[in-house]
Image 1 (tube, rainbow, N blue to C red):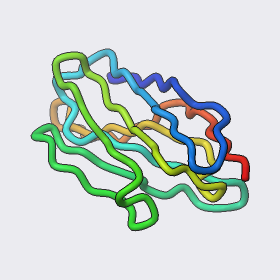
Image 2 (tube, helix red, strand yellow):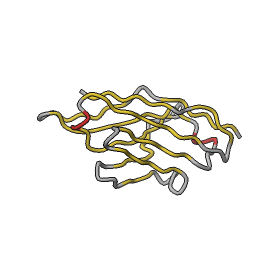
Image 3 (cartoon, rainbow, N blue to C red):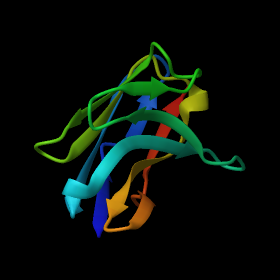
Length: 119
């Protein structure tokens, strides 16, 4: 099994920055892609950024040019540098990982960390 633990959320002013971090534990050798999702009150969870084991990254249009995802495979961590934060970035942010253990695929989330951006 794989477990994910996020850290780094908090309160920021519009235009400010925050960095989220996530560390994976357990059968980390099985992890393929890692990423970040977010869910704002009353809205569905949405993908923010994704990074493959090889380092290829994709971003939601709403965060392109402002957020940067990075990954350290040796340390089993994924980070999200968030710049130029806007009030609409307020949400609970979840670390995500997918992969295979044996013949069983998985797609899991951490418990989430709150990001609040004030105007």
